[in-house]
Every structure is written in structure tokens, then in C-alpha cells.
Length: 289
Length: 314
Image 1 (cartoon, rainbow over the protein chains, first blue to last red):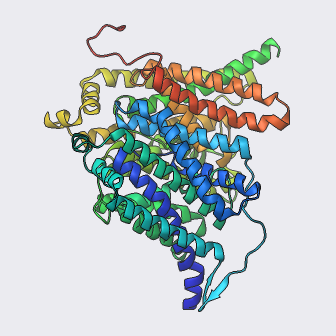
Image 2: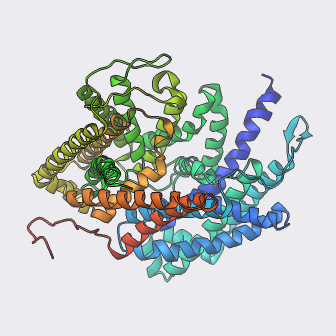
Image 3: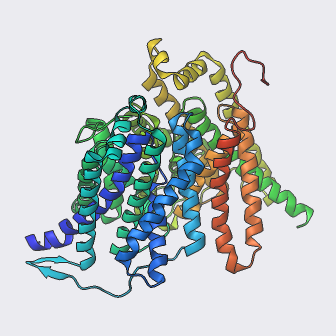
């Protein structure tokens, strides 16, 4: 295999997949870090977001224009899910909320299956030939995906570092009681977190769909890699989620060198167990709950 | 449906309820008494099913197995296999909060599914394992079903009595102490991690046994026999609705939920085909919603956990 083949058929797909995982993992790490529970409905929220975008595309809107609308819709959906199903459990042990989120995952998936059916769908039909950039083969949608991920990560990092509400979110992640005593409104921060997480879910689902196809199990199937990415990078750390996402994505594409292709999905699980075994705080020193 | 058909159906349901009751008891050891979140129940179930099937089935070309060993060996092996998979997962994950165990068990269930589908030499791949013997399987249909029901009921009763005895013993008090206040229990010198690992492994072994009972009942197993997420979730609802922390509640929940689930399936099967598919997913939605409603309005379940020393009805 030449170097160019390696880059084009393994590294580049790994980076594209990894950056999609990164967007999902950021959402997971925000919920895990700020609201302190493992959110199992994350993948199925991504599925729902992807299918909302599909509905818009079917109505005649360009896919990349449908994305921001789908993100906005999912932001509202996520806040609604929190209000309906998670909020009243906050006085009980957090693990009960984890269970509720598993139920929500099943419910969201059932909604997608009833409304959109179970057959695979695509945003656009037809084969797209990749363009040649100095030997690296890239399709437009891959380029746009990478650009969108970079924009999302930079925007979110600036927001968390410098804005008032971003700082409030980080404060609540560090210590909720202390944050409340300092005048942070936990309720509003929770709502804001869900809005951001919902939008991120829609983005990751959409990008998964546009680079491959949409089906009702797509989100559930990427839940494990996304969790592995979040924990690998360090729970609560946005940069960590990006790093973890890229590592998991690239590792999955590389796994075919040592594992039969059927076991690609096992890569994330092995990485997860390894990091829990040797460095549970994650590569960038996150939290351990 | 005539009377005989109804009786057949009742016995059939009874056997499956017994199998689900074992799963629910296993989960009760893990969640009800110890607070461990196992989201991969279907995986342990499948491991038990395949372990017993491979050891006891008739020989077949192209896959391992056909040892035709006695049933008891198969059942013990199913428990051992499920326990052997639970042990390393628990060892790694039980140091942390139960969220991590939940993620890892979702992962292990997925890996088990992959292995079953891929490793044809071991599991027969998509064709599965057939020719699994059933005890008293040579009898006529009805006596054979009744004999199997008796076996399942006996095993559920034995499991119930053993778990109940263990929970009333000092071990059970210690487990509840660890569940309710880990720090205090640790300060009293209890080995939190080791005890949790015990509970996780015991519970998983029971789930493996349930898998073995399932495979000998059906006489075969394929990878499509169990939908991992729905099976796991049904068992969670059985335990939560019945009353986690209460073994009788676990069994009652298994009966209630399985009857509702099967009867609703009978109903949706009679719908015209255009909406039958959607009705199938609507059922899943309702199961998810049921959990939310139970968690909201009756989190202690139908039969709440009894506190030691307190009168049964508070």
C-alpha cells in the first residue's frame, strides 16, 4: 500500500468519522460534566435530529441550510425532554436519571421509526466523485463536515471561555453548590446546556447521515464510540472530547489492519476499557464520577 | 380460540414468565440490592443460551459443539460463562460510579452480538445452533410443555429462596448498607468493590441460567432470537414496576409486564399490515413511556422493598 492509499482510504475517513464522533462526544461530556449523569438518549437524539433535517431536505431545502434549522429544533426538543423526563428526578440518585434516559432513547427511536419508517434514507441520491487536492481525495461533503466541526468547536470554546453564561456553565461543572452560592442560576444553566447539547446532537446526526445514510439505529450504534471518546479525552473537557473523538474515529478505521472488519465496532469498547484501567481521568485530566 | 388452545397458550406464557422472572431476580441482585446498572442483560442471557446449546446439542457440521453432554452440565456452564464475562467487566468498572458500568455493559452486549454473528465455527453464525435437547422432549406436546413448566418453576423457586435467604442474612444488610451509603459502609470496614463484584457476578450468572432455560425450551437459537435493547429494557421495567429490592416484586413484575407485552403483540398482529409495522414501534414507545410514568408516580413499584424491622406496610 502506498502512502497516498493509506491517507486516502484510512486516515482521511478516520478523521472525518472522528470529527463527527467529536461533536457527539462534546455533548456527552457537557451532560456528564455539568449535569453529572451518563446520557444514554444522546445517540437517538442525534438520529431524531438527522431525520428532522431529512424532513426539511424533502421539503426542498438544501441539506447544509437545513442543518442550522434542525439544530434549533433539537435544542428545543432537548429542553423539552429534560423538563418532561429528567427534571423531576434531580433529587433522586443520578443513576435513576441514567435509567430514564435509556427509556427516552427507546421512545425517541420509536418516534423516528413510526414517523419515518425503518428503511435507510439519504439526503441526496447519486454517487459523488471526490476531488483531488494534491493527491488527497476529498468529497465536498467531507470538506464541509470538517469545516462545520471546526466552526462548532471554536465557537463553543470561545463561548465557554469568555461569555458570562459559558463561565457559569464551567462553574457549575466544577462545583454546583459553590456556583449557586455565587449567584449562578442552576436552572437556567441546565436549560442552556440542554439547548447546546440538543443542537450538537442534531449536528452529529446530520453529518453521520450526509456522509453515509440515515437509519433509525444510526444514533444508537454510535453511542458507544461517543462515550468512549468523551471518557478517553476526560469527562467535562471539550478539547478532550475532540481529541478522544479523533482517536476513536481513526482507531476504528485503522482497526482493520489487526482485526477482522466485522469487529470494527469493538474498537471503541477496547479503548474505553483500556482508559478506565490505566487512566480513568482521561488524557486531558477530566472528572471521574 | 378453543379451551385447549387457551391452555396451551397459558402454559407457554408460564414458561416464558418463569424465564423472565429469573432474569428479573438476577437484575434485582444487581440493581435492587446493590445499585448496579446493568444495561447489557441480553448479552449475558445470550452467552448462557449459547454456552448450554453448544455443550448439549447434537453434532452438526461446520461448528463446534455436539458434545451431547447432560443438561445439568450445560446449565452450570451457562452460569459459569456469564459469570466469567461479568467478572473482568465488573473488576474494571465497579471502582467508579454505576454510570461507567452501564456504558461498559452496553458495550459488552454489543460485542457478544458481534461475536455470535461472526464466529460461525463457534455459534453457527446466522444459522444458529439447532438440535438442542429439551428435557422430557420425547413426550407428547402438552405433557412435555407441562414438564418444562415444572422445571422452570422449580428453578425460579430455588433461585427465589436462595436469594431471599442471602438477602436476609448479614450479607444482605451489608449490601443495602453499601448501596445506601457507600462511604459509611467503607468506613465500617466493608470491602465495597469486592462486594459489588460479587453481586454483579451472581446476578449475571442467574441471567446466564435464564438463557440456558430459554434455549432448551426453543430447542434452537439464532442471533435474531433476542432484540438486545428491547429484551434488556423489558426486564428493567419488570423489576422497577414490580418493586426493586423485593424478590416477590421482581417475579410479579415479570408476570405483569410479559402478559401485557404478549397480549399487545397479539392485538397488533391482527391490525391491517399498513399500520401493523407502525403499531409494533408504537408498543416500544409505550414501554419507554411506562418506565417514565413508574419512575414518576410509583418509583417504589407495586411491592415496595421491605425495610428490616419495619412492619410490611408503612
